[in-house]
Image (cartoon, rainbow, N blue to C red; front, side, top):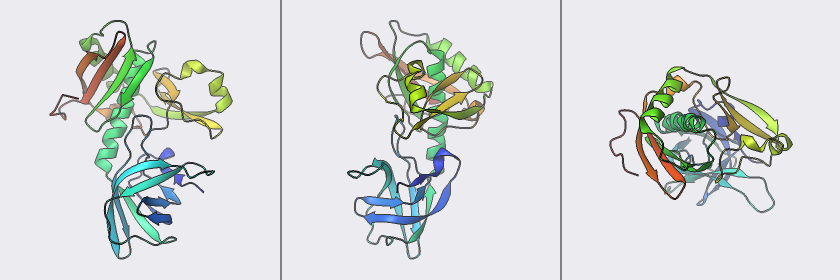
Length: 247
């Protein structure tokens, strides 16, 4: 059985107890986890695993699928001389500041997408300090307008929530899918839609986000550049927290 993904119901959990289902040099898999596996442009979580008589770093979290089995979540470890036994109990703890920054930035990218809701998203990447979206746009967008609109939506402190629809319902509403490079998280029979405010944003997303847009804090547009004839890259960062504005 794949791990119960606790972050899907509560992205603010910082630690949890879990039982080891697989333990080896390729990583650790549990019956439940709060660690987000890399996907949709958001990096995998990092943190610490503790058990009786041992402790080691989790340096990445990745999706894992054995042949003929459902997709699971694999926790990649730093070099460790000892590993907990299968069936053993452990405590796993997030690098919370890093995860929270990803939540803030991921939500910010949804606001950026909402500003350009008529332009398809051709790529994106979430980072702890700066993040980017690429849009199919014929002309270079105005930086000051983007900064103003983003911070207005943040100050309005919209509720960030979710609702679920079936795979068939999503297939019947292709306009909900904004991203050209990332497929929605389908295949489980239902799909989570991220909602921001009454009509700010509505689209499929399996990542982690803050509860209200005000939690993002002030942001700035660090860079806008052309990546092709109609491909515009917009890089945003948390205001006052970015020392290196290069990609």
